[in-house]
Amino acid sequence: MNWDDSTTGPDDAPTAPGGRLVGSFADGEDQAVEAALRPKSLDEFVGQERVREQLDLVLRAARARGATADHVLLSGAPGLGKTTLSMIIAAEMQAPIRITSGPAIQHAGDLAAILSSLQEGEVLFLDEIHRMSRPAEEMLYMAMEDFRVDVIVGKGPGATAIPLELPPFTLVGATTRAGLLPPPLRDRFGFTAHMEFYDPAELQRVVHRSALLLDVEIDTDGAAEIAGRSRGTPRIANRLLRRVRDYAQVKVDGRITREVACAALRVYEVDSRGLDRLDRAVLEALLKLFAGGPVGLSTLAVAVGEERETVEEVAEPFLVREGLLARTPRGRIATPAAWAHLGLVPPQAAGGPGGRAGQGGLFGP
Ligand SMILES: Nc1ncnc2c1ncn2[C@@H]1O[C@H](COP(=O)(O)OP(=O)(O)OP(=O)(O)O)[C@@H](O)[C@H]1O
Image (cartoon, rainbow, N blue to C red):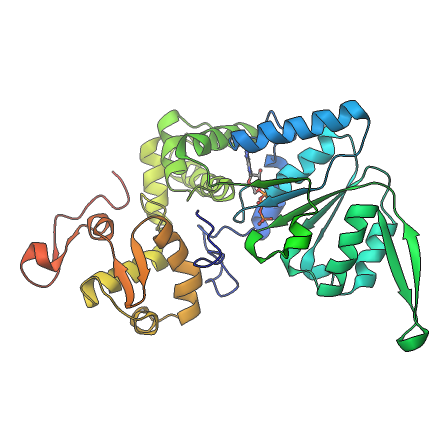
């Protein structure tokens, strides 16, 4: 996704309907299986060629110098492999890793406790670093630069700062919103990588790799079909693979072909472009009720019976990224691709209200 901070939010923010198959945040089941599916080295990590190459250099050079690697900032949408990459950094540096997140660090003292217990060379993975509290963030500046923090003891005029030396460590910060990071924090990272959405060929490799680890038989077309519906995100690819595997086990002989993948994903209502029921409901309302727009967000939300925020934060980012919907100052409008995807004819072309063309194969053969 063009994870453009100004126009998009997480595509399955907390308002998302529960258990969304194409949501990019990890659910309980994901967390249970993700450990088994995570690549353990840079060589195993699929795609993101430039990031991999640059990171490889950073880590090799640090290893050759016998030094701790520079701090690394990883930005990109959820499920693209930021946690995985942080673990790989630790593995490649043969260092232990400590995992925490911005929301877990509300007080500077929370951060001081973590920092003061780090071992030399340890990797500290700080997920959602943009959600850390301000005082903790300021403490981090000094820790990153000078490997030192000032612990404030007492309150008011009697408060004193006790300097605390820290062992050299590597901070790996992860954020979905690099634009929200204050520049002084961003500037303290020696290496910054933006993770892009994966192309279908890369996702196909992710699916094949995971199928092998899960002991699932899948052919090239079956993997391509799952990859094409995974919204550029390995986490979604792995989740769709597991659901298709269920279908293949119960309905056929366990082997995943294109036909099996299409039939399974029809059951789960994930269409050929990776849209789910909510995404299509928004598009259908826009096309059928409002002739493709422009229509205001609130009106559109009422039409689909969802909260405004759900439409804006859950459905729209992917529709915008796919070039199916545009946000304009006058309201939401559908693009020609949206008409084509739902197999409908725009009013101008039909010479009247939007008409139905032959129903395109929304879910594949
Ligand atoms: N490049 C990759 N190659 C193979 N598998 C990958 C890759 N990137 C991610 N995955 C798989 O996708 C899943 C999600 O990855 P990960 O947890 O690292 O994402 P994330 O960006 O940290 O997400 P979040 O921001 O929600 O924590 C993992 O199971 C991992 O195995």
